[in-house]
Length: 113
Image (tube, rainbow, N blue to C red; front, side):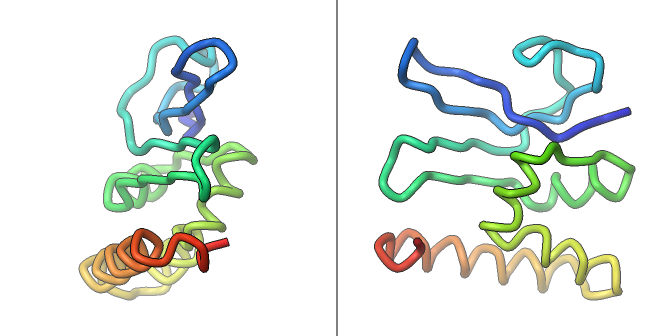
């Protein structure tokens, strides 16, 4: 089974994470199939960069996010956009919406909390 999960990077006491697609049995920082994003919880607000087109493709193939990644997807709106993709909306529309939402988070970082 393929999972979308966090892979820890960074120095001791200064964690940041890559969102990776990996086999369920591989270790946390072991082999992975593809890097699909980046998450840094230490910035204010937390930095979250997701390649939504790749996320949607892997989830259509059956990849499941872990609980922590699913929470990040809900925060970024990716989970809601994936549900709309399954119902039949076009991928281009959803990716444009995601780009606008990301730009709004960068312009107004204090309102994104």
